[in-house]
Image (cartoon, rainbow, N blue to C red; front, side):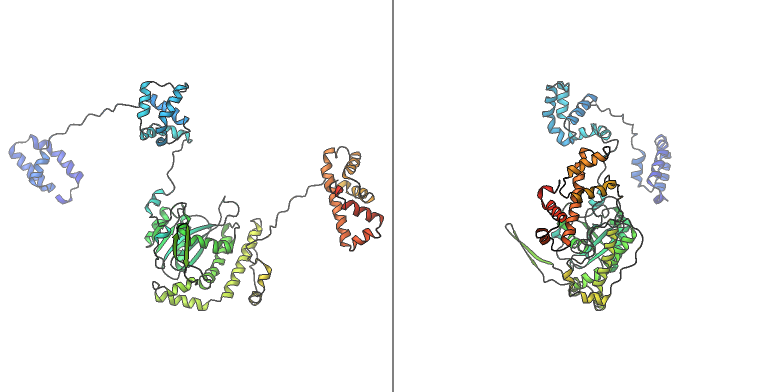
Length: 525
């Protein structure tokens, strides 16, 4: 029974019988002590000490003298504002310089007591006195700690030189944004996962930046890698450094590390794949919504096989620094699949599944699938989100595509997601021109007198309609005259042998037109 009594129950029992024990006679004390020992399980000597302890009196509340009163606080606020709201650790060494200057110019009333307290105040005390002032200065909001700062502190940092040739399964993870020219709003992002040992890379499109979608993308990537994952290395993005993602990875037995902030070289392997794979194949267009996410998924489904099975990649062997010179030596370039098959850390069952995948893959078929998916993404970039009507999937004749590989270089850049001309699907509204009622009259004047200057044309228009045409309209008339002369000149040139006819036996009208057009002074007259 005694073992089941909690500390709170024992304390209540002591308070209940301690007065009765102290006021009882010797025989009664012995009986009370026997019962108390049986109930609490205490040793008899310890029970005697507990019941005979002296009565404790409540201590009087300590009165703390206030050293820094409201006057010091007001002076500190003036110093803080005059220093452009510096932090307390920087403000403290500035007070001996700033305080006499304010007193000298009459900005602050300072006596010896205030000066002494202001010079001896600590940075922590200044933070305490200015806490409410700073909250009001920020618009009523307290300064928040960094997003997921506690989670970041719990994740160890791993730099570029800390990998020490790991076994396959340790991957670097990063996001590539498909935001186009604007990072506002929601857009699709590609999660890139690169294995350190083999260079095997998987790309998974994510519709929005969300911790749940990050977990789903990692789960999908685990099924695509030819070996089990052992660890993930993130950057400091809040989409990764949150309790949901980090705790889930650890629950799955994955070692979680992160790179240093603003040190992209800590994730050099995946950063290189961001450009060599994602940007090279997808480009810099903006993709939004589930349809764009599905299109990217179809592209990456064939890219993963074409890149990992057939495209060789370099891997750094050693790096030597001699003064300011860095000498890098690389292993012979081989595809990531070859590194997986040659690595002793991969099981034979995983290697056998990879060999079956290699035997069943046709590189030309995969490359055709890449071009089909790129064509679909390119059309989506052209629409700029203005046309949401679904289109028929792009179909490419495999035999014709394979035959065109011999001459495809002659067409220049063939990736459909790159260098696409801008086609505006929403036309600009056409405004009525002020010259439309007088176009026929202006052409008649120019055909009759090809050398007539634009100023003369404007004078005639002002005489015909003075309310519409003013002197300030000269520049617009010059453009109209220039456009008409360019049109006439083009028709004469396309007619053929215009130079001979213009100089040998020109007609009066044509000769005058050619001379007026080719005269430098008439270009903008």
